[in-house]
Image 1: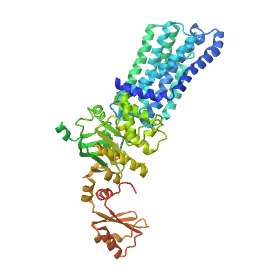
Image 2: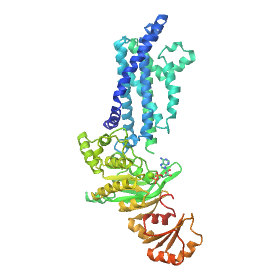
Image 3: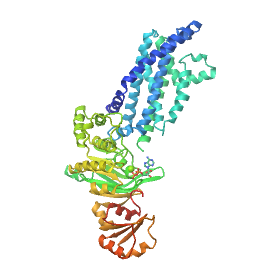
Image 4: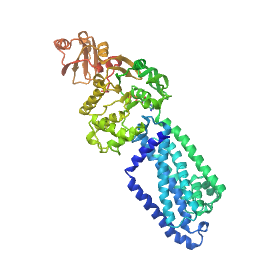
Length: 255
Length: 314
Ligand SMILES: Nc1ncnc2c1ncn2[C@@H]1O[C@H](COP(=O)(O)OP(=O)(O)O)[C@@H](O)[C@H]1O
Ligand SMILES: [Mg+2]
């Protein structure tokens, strides 16, 4: 494992250059987002008397945005940085010329992506708490949940990125998978409002499992049976993604 | 220990590399001894990089035997790589990071402590004359500086073997000479170098022994001097013509004047042991060449003789 830490250390060094800028955005973004949605839109929703789950809108939407943020950061960290390390900076090849092996390269980078996800989500969670939108001490568990959501997205995405020749597919993935999941898997409104068919599609998306898990934790309304299903689904996706990543990385880098 | 020292550091028999249907390396044999500078000379696509990547344990052989430092690259890849220094054909430096950071990160991959890496980094950057640029970003460095940085970086683990894949391709002549000078210095210190090149002057300058590669096969093996003696003559007379092709009957007319005649686009090469004498006799025949050059034979001539083609496409 200490070998994977060596590749993790590279990513740490690499990001230290853009550290300050990204810390700023990762604090400013949630404040703006939650301010606009929770206070702006939330005022309208609350007045209509039809708030989802019977809580004020910000408490409903904040954990949804939290989970969706974990998904988006994880996916994007597993796109350009992965392809770039193969095609542009060739950083993976530099690692592979040393005692590091494919698995150290994969795990080191995944650990870094998880770090990005968890640190951003921790800031988010603190902002949500400051808005008074966390109703239960169980809300703390939303952070490990975000870690799990992150790996469930970053591992399969990295496995796929390692098979690509150029970045055209990333725009397609973002447009036709990430953004629809962001909008329609329970982030902004309960999926019970969706037509029957789409509801079943939503149940299958990992993002719904992530959103529902985070929301049940911050609202303190955990159905433990369902929570186990969420965790198992996301964990299965993460493990499958890692297994595939080991294969696609090897095929690509050790031809 | 003594017995081990006599084993070749790299040993290949019938080594093959296939990419789907394409045979990139087609059953080659070679041994590299400790302290030797060993070269692979051949044109683009000859299979040089494929061979280097197999030796570097980042590309599994498709067939044959390969041993590096006495170990099997497929089973002991990571152990072998710990003892190798690699200068790949395409740089893998991180342009966003500084020169020092590039050295540090790379040293850490080998599990070296920060203090050790810092010391070695400073010493090695001095060795490749980059000590002034320690804290500048890599991006604005010239091609030659980047190459020297890659060489310094490859030495951070004090490797037993240094693999250099086209160390000076794409550099201007002055930058090439600086790199050659550094590699000479490494040679004098007893390093074992494996290098590929399609520059015959580079092979002549740096290699104790080399193989000429073409289309995945080894066409000849020996020291530069041996190869020239075996496959060429001492001297060459080059007749240059303004026209794309020399006059048709010319080759036949001068046939008797040289041991061998090669016709290339715009020039004729006459292989002979006494260049001046041959040039004189060509002039006596009244041949109207635009210019006449008498020179020593090079590895380029060896390659031409073995394959009928020039090393670098004309
Ligand atoms: N990863 C690869 N996939 C498919 N073909 C390859 C790959 N690498 C090299 N080749 C092919 O193998 C042959 C030898 O290439 P290479 O070893 O790079 O030659 P050289 O380094 O002498 O120019 C070429 O025809 C090249 O196109
Ligand atoms: Mg090559």
